[in-house]
Image 1: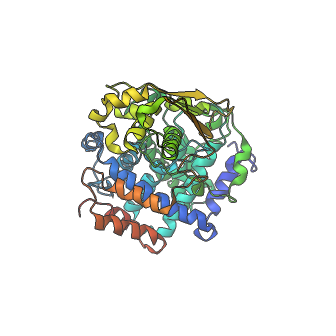
Image 2 (image 1 turned 90 degrees about the horizontal axis):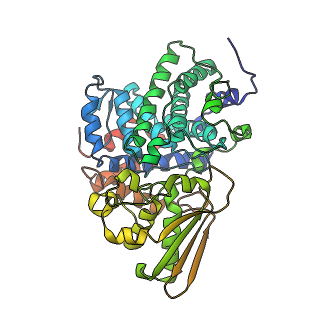
Image 3 (image 1 turned 135 degrees about the vertical axis):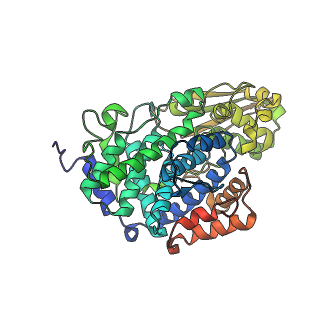
Length: 460
């Protein structure tokens, strides 16, 4: 069997997974794990409102029977793979989940959905183990993603998320290095997802998160039964970096064990693609500073890196799908200026047809800023021309929600409360507060199935 040199990035990655323990995690990583576990649960509860969820659950009844895990919010008992699929879809289906910007990865969607579904079926997984599993998983997902230098072609949030989720479960189980490496190789062999669904605004885009949750669960099962996966899954001639992200930088792996990626995640204040947030942040900040009305605006220009243009520079239309509109910067920024914010109801059919939004969106353009990076989401610059001749501008080294411009605990909890109350059956205020309290003391929780129980809209 071919074995790559032990100084390979693959070997270093596996060593990090196997060696990480709760006791070695720095305080900021533990705090961030709690923050983004709660954030991910909140956006998933809101995600129950998307009509496709009901269709997927109905379809899933033909995928097998079992009661290992529950679908968040509504509480149906299903096989763990089905729960992971649906819960992962619910996290990502409104583009409201956290992101690691340098990696261009939404790691917690695949990771938390998979880890909690697996933990429900297993039982006895405690809060410290979940925190550690999430921290390891995000390290793996984000490190693999941030090494890439080429244009985003495959759907990195799903693929890197699957490798991260596999690593997170391996960490909780304390699998040895060979078994962990096999599990990652098996997960790699199942990865799926391209940017074509993103370009088209297809509803399959968030389903790619769900597809990859199942890959991680299968990988762990097979590896535990002694199945040997491809060892050189990152650097081999047909490994991840040869096929998915061929322009990559190995030095990204030097940070493992020294800096934890979970502490670098960005909140998404608005339920739209992260690449739209710079335009929203800049436009609202300029409006707050200068007090102009939307009628005063002649033109808005968002100067941004190539990735922002690739992801969200698209024109709106009255018949666009919600999945397309969430990735349309002119529509999202126009909505923010007209309403003062952006919320889940702004992607309902009546809002998408609103003539005022389309009229303002027609005055918003996205322009290249000359940034050579193909994976950067910042810095950005927003320029506004007013009818009185004034020229306003704001440079954004970091966008609201990023570590350099953090949301803060108060606004994080405000987002969680708003999200948890916006699902198909709103979570009652007392249950919202109980869930916040539970996550705040997650280290003391003996079985993380309690997280799922507290996330039910009704008792089941």
